[in-house]
Length: 276
Image (cartoon, rainbow, N blue to C red; front, side, top):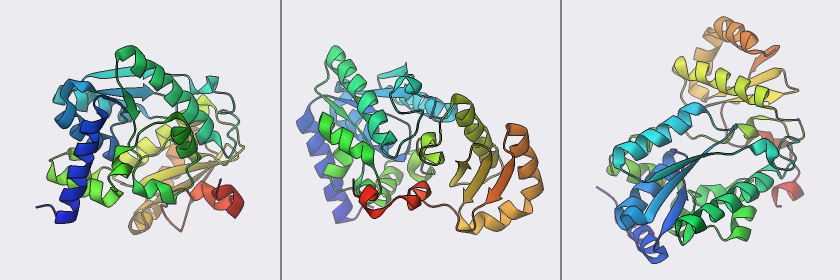
């Protein structure tokens, strides 16, 4: 049973989607975009389409999840492969990398939306994102991308609760972020490094870890973040983890004693940079 506050937020979301009329959603298959796709499809039917970007920084498992959901629910979907390394500045990984990438990708989505006859491009940004270092939000604002979840005042916890109520399997899915966030700013990103991160994180998921990140320093040092309650489990597996990570290509394998936290690579940024 939803609280009155959550019911109002959901009603506001549905009213806003109805007002938009037709939307093309940047659909990743994660917690936020799956709930938003569910609502958009419920309100707009075929006037809501999912577009999933197959990128070097997105694991194959995430693309597969997005495709499976749309097939199961009968949602119109387009999967497009895009070359992030063609984006000026992406490979160099500056502190505004997310801005450069989002601007390029969503400009492309707007062109697709125009060709397909959709009035708006929308994304799954929620209220929590405003409290993090998110230069990509500036790009979305400049392009006029709509963020219905934020418009309705929905936080991540709200979205999980509403997803559970709607029977969506993603209600308890771990939060995921673009794998480019695994690298120290100004350290070059390559397809090989991204593949190493994906292989390392897939291995940890296979061992039953839930929310995690494998951060990369100097190209060959892996810093593993898992939930604080799973640190001892990681320590007990240290021999196997080290052996597998070295086979993947890492020279050094470390465990972050602070555990998983969003945006840990942003901790080195100055106050001025964080406010950009």
